[in-house]
Image (cartoon, rainbow, N blue to C red; front, side):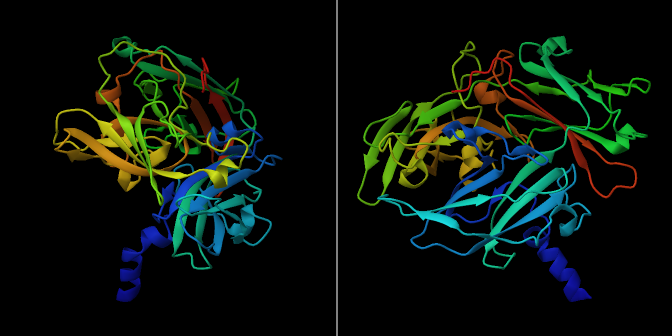
Length: 420
């Protein structure tokens, strides 16, 4: 009994709780999961698809290696809080829940060799939250990466709008989402127990809002409103994202101060950044924290296998502080990767971190850690109501006697869309 207890104590994260977006091995790079599309910009879209959609989700990732590995994939169904649900595999999959990742291509004439993998996520029969797990061979303890995705069904019509915050003191800095849900197609006896509304800003999970109790409920019309006056549905608007252009290695892109091309590697130095919280708001195009893999050095080629990897150093010029500074965005998995924490360079009086990035266009911001999982950019980036952000509203419903949370409604909002 003691040995069993010790096993459960030591290995819960590696075997049972792999339900976050995470890359577990340093040689796995450029992980992207998105709905299949025909344009390069499709890789910016959130991994959310309707149940029964003809457009599958595609996983792309690189393995920094000379030879391919045998990788396997598995799906994990989760509840609204991203804990493993009570469903068995055959409840949401018509086939055995283990798949071979067989589609791979070698990089072409790159200084750092890599193998590019592509995997099409199998269709599921239930809506809700899912985690895609990739592991070596048939050994689930050798996890390479995990990625979250969502499958929704249009059961509860959802309406949402971005409005000025009810809190007049912070109206110039925040954005509020008011949400309306029509639950006439479900038996909602206890909204606080059966319903969960989740709001995401720019595909981030660290600052997502979870709302269980509606502000107003009309039983005759079967309408619930989420219009909290206490900030439950309010976000700091932040600022437009900083960016670097790594599409070139023979020339310096925008916000790149230098590029050094060696026989076995490419190194880039980003321009030195400074805090901009006190500057007037400036509007420009960005990717809302995401990144694009793209090369302009081989325009007619395949960006996925012909793009170089570049050791890229970021610089933030501020006085040294006792509080850690982080680089956040999709490039660091929103602060989850160890490279997101910056290090003080006494010689140049800047905070620095170096990332291995595939050629492309990368958005980022600087932040401090507000809690174990949440990052706050206000101190370095400021916050302006005019900032263009993208929001998602996900509505979960636990039917009476059910063993899982259905994702019964989904809305994507991007007012004043100014995506690059």
